[in-house]
Amino acid sequence: MTDLLRRLFRTRQGAFGVSILMIVTLICLLGPALAPYSPDRMDFLGRFAAPGVRHWLGADQFGRDELSRLLYGARDTVPAALLATLAGTLVGAVLGTLSAYAGGSWDEAIMRTIDAVMAIPGLLLALLIASTLGGGEQSALLAIAIAFAPGMARITRSVALAARQEEYVAAAIARGESGVRIVFAEMLPNVIAPVIVETTIRVSFAVMLLATLSFLGLGAQPPSSEWGLLVSDGRTYLHDAPWLVLVPGAAIAISAIGFNLLGDGLRDALNPRDER
Amino acid sequence: MLLSINDLSVRFATAAGTADAVASLSFAIEEGETLAIVGESGSGKSVSALAIMGLVPNPPGRVTSGQIVFRRRNGSTEDLLRASSARLRDIRGNEIAMVFQEPLAALSPVFTIGEQIAESLRLHQRKSHADAMRMAVRMLGSLGISEPEMRARSYPHQISGGMAQRVMIAMAMACRPRLLIADEPTTALDVTIQAEILSLIRQMKEETGMAVLFITHNLGVVAQIADRVAVMYAGRLVEEGPTKQIFSSPRMPYTSGLLASVPRLVTDDSPLVLSAIPGEPPSPLAHPRGCAFHPRCRYAVKGLCDTTPPPLRDLGNGQAARCLRIDEIVGGAT
Image 1 (spheres, each protein chain N blue to C red):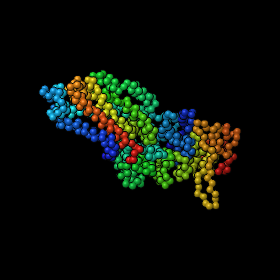
Image 2: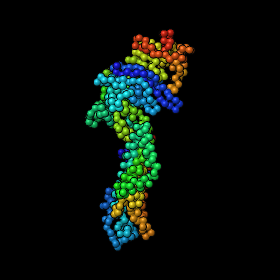
Image 3: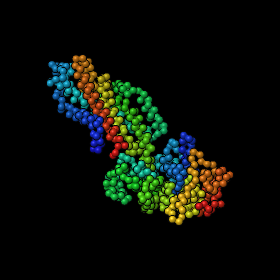
Image 4: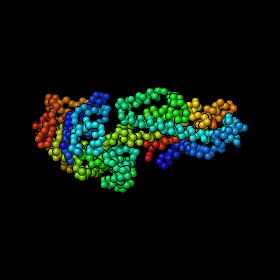
């Protein structure tokens, strides 16, 4: 583990990504303690206050402090994106490995279903699921997980197909291991490295998807200060108070870039062709 | 009779047509006996071993006929080609274990060898993880591996091929199987390690009284370890018998050719002649008509060997051979 971190820091992207994500994590953990005001405290004299000494990042139409809302909102955005991606990855990885292990008609059935789901663009699918489930933070999360699973299944299957041919799988069968055990204890641990890389990159999509769903009113609901919702709220006042869109927009972009860089760094750090 | 294979055929569907990898193969292994199957690459020896374990890759491979009857510990018999998967899981690893050619490929790269031995112990026996780990370390020690505690924490890529093969044997022996299938277990190792692995298998055999099915193309190894030898050519059994007898009086010209092509130490006054069998093994897609060996056989007779498939003839002394001219070439076969 420490070895992996060291290798991660050796690449520039990895070091950058980890640094950004450490700051994001700190904000998620300590946000409420750092915030100068309560996120819901209204200040009618400070409505649309421009960034300045009193409100560092300005204030919104109710005079709520934008910095405080941003710091609180991190908790509604980043962990949710992470959770949604992990759930999608888990389901996809299990399906993909199962498909590769079983082969034949099982493989066909699983993969053709996945093809059908993948024919629908990801955002559209997430929208469809979120609206069917009635919107809200949890349904947005589930929608993203479901939208991600097929792609993860595809990627995992391609790696697992190679692992299926490995002799350690034959050895496991010869040892009398069950199919379930071979999938979970032999193949999954061996295919997980490339899947982890894909997962981290997908978290950045999830951050944006989650913000998009909130923006469209299908994700977090007011008075939450989820970042997508902040952008959506601020959009009306884009002309007079552009910081209401720019600040949360930048936060979304920076965390997305953080996860992307981490993914790139991990891909290099986990490359088995590198020396161990 | 511990294991008897009757009329086993395995066919592979390839882009170029169907290949008969194994054609109506029959042989048996007695309890506690070591049988070596010898043959060139592509002779079907490995595929027969895989068929016993149900590991023939499908597709493209398929067992098209035959029976593999195994006598279980409790005395009941089971046809391994028709048994339920639950029964097979109970037999595999527990009563029949297998050791592979590439020990490093047969170990999972992401777990330590201690964990892998412990898991194979836990698979068929109820044991706590801690108990299994302690047993794994003890087993590593009994295999003559120094610093077993430290080694148990190593990953496969950190150990040598010879040590990995010892680990594989330890895992195979975990449940004291009654039959060990060893598919070229020494081929990927260098010669000194080969000898160690062979003596380890022999030692395990003496301790547990298990039978060994040893697949190899190395006749030197056969001479060291086998009680009986079965020679395979083009998917068929061509000669079978007690090791000493096969080595001293082979009756099938292919066997004699194999024996003659073993390099020997030569002295100054005798010329160095490395005899080889002319030609190359037939493609499994198109086995020659008649005797599959006739295009390479110097005793082949036109109109006989290229038309009539020879039957496996029992020679009465435990030896059997597949040759039409068996009576004519006695003694002259070497």
